[in-house]
Amino acid sequence: MRKLLLQEASDGSPDALAVLGSVRKLPPETIRKIVPRLVAQTSQIIADAKTGRHDYGYDPTHTLSMLNIWHPDEADWEALCAILEAPAVMAEHKASAMVLLGFHPEMIPAEFSQRVGDIAKRISTGDVAASSMFGHGPRLIAASAKLALLLDSFEEEEANARLIELLSGDSTDRRWAAHALAARNLPEETPILVGLLTDQDPHVRSAAAAFVAARYARSESESIENSALFDAIDEPGTWVPARIAEVWADFDELPEFLRSNVETLRKHRSAHVRSRARECEALLEPGSEGST
Figure 1 (tube, rainbow, N blue to C red):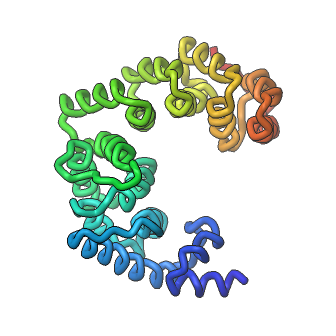
Figure 2: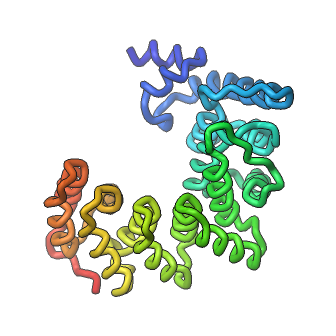
């Protein structure tokens, strides 16, 4: 079955590629067949967009960015940059790729880092259009701002102004501000993330909570961070406690001082939260020293 799926994926089937699961495990020979097809598809999207034609189905840009990240020897960054900076291409064919790049900026090759950062900056400032038929424009702009910040594409004053703009924006902007601040991981910006843990939007709170939860598990957090985190764990809603449990479940092992927090999550009304909390419980190591 896997051999058949690999062949279908090589022949251009996105469904087969999805069924195969993690692209990290795909053999290089399969990637070498898929990437040129994706490049041809993104080139066609650019050509069509120039004539006012737009297809909102399958997004080859996201797939290309994913393969570029996890298969650098077979990557085509030139083609990815071409579609990201094409002004006529809609946000539906850029946003997901920009989000992915923002979570893995360290995987962008040095020779393309500056160019990708410049594209992200120009999208975030409006120099490259973020037109959208289905409302993906704000997501693209905010994700681009995050990536540009992480790649140091802004001057310091520009970076500060862009962060302030995101923090004062809508929930999408604030969520991406939280992601950017967490990824930058600057001590002087941690209090801002603590403040975002009290944001009215659960998506914003969950982004901030993920950062603080990881710091707490590594015994790096301050008392004010811990207090905000404990309040987040006690939330009756699902989104934030689930994100905290997901972060801890991704650790190889967890310190014993998390046990009471994990037990709180085990009693949550959400089955998903309880399930991830059970994963955390299995990772607890007796005798670990705690955080204060």
